[in-house]
Amino acid sequence: MTAPTRIMSYNIRKGRGHGFVHRPDRVLQVIAGLSPDIALLQEADHRLGDRPAALPRAEIEAETGLVPLQFGQGAPSLGWHGNTMLLRPDIDVTDIARLDLPGLEPRGAVMAELALPGGPLRVVGLHLGLLRHSRRRQLTEIITRLAARDPMPTLIAGDFNEWSDEVGLGRLARAYEILSPGKTFHARRPVASLDRFAFNDLLHWRDAGVADDLAARRASDHLPIWIDVVAGAHGQGRAAR
Image 1 (tube, rainbow, N blue to C red):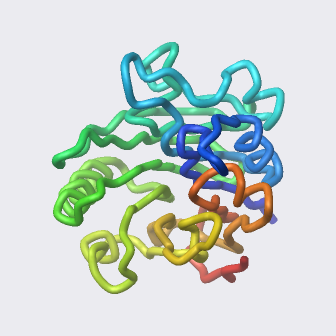
Image 2: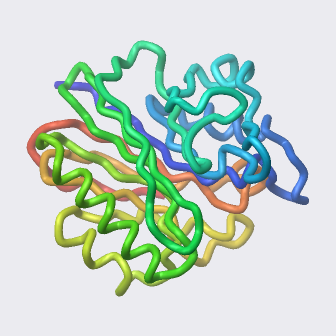
């Protein structure tokens, strides 16, 4: 049986957690504690100027065993519109893309197609806008871009910024199953499931959850989510917290 691939998604708030103090070591501790194969991060860069990285490049691999995937921006940025992807060094990357997303705010998403022991996997990391009409346009753009590619087990993950469980994500739900492992915001007292996974019917998930411990509650204003997936026939898993 193929071992599952663990993927986490985490809005790290530029490394500013409890007390709004810049403590990237806390973020790296939380990532390392989940032992992911792939980590999708949001707000991984500072927003102004040349968007310097919120996490020290030299410490990422040393603390987590993961390396940042290069999306062509170069130093000092870690990714694209604050989105980045960290991978185990032995994972083969077959394609990458940056997606510009429409809306009133500058937004983007990152995509990578990976060759894993169990088969190919496409992973998309996103951070949607604050306004629902912008989020809908952004989801339409992502769905359209993915539909133009060859079919492949696909996981979309990130901060969807959608407070409702009933409306706002309908166009995504028509093509992907949406999973909210639990409440993630605000980390000190979680009341909303802003962070989610979505996947197509070529992907099987075994387990998922929210990392809700003292370290995570201090490292950012979001709690990280994680999921264990296997490429292949779709099947239901168990959400855990």
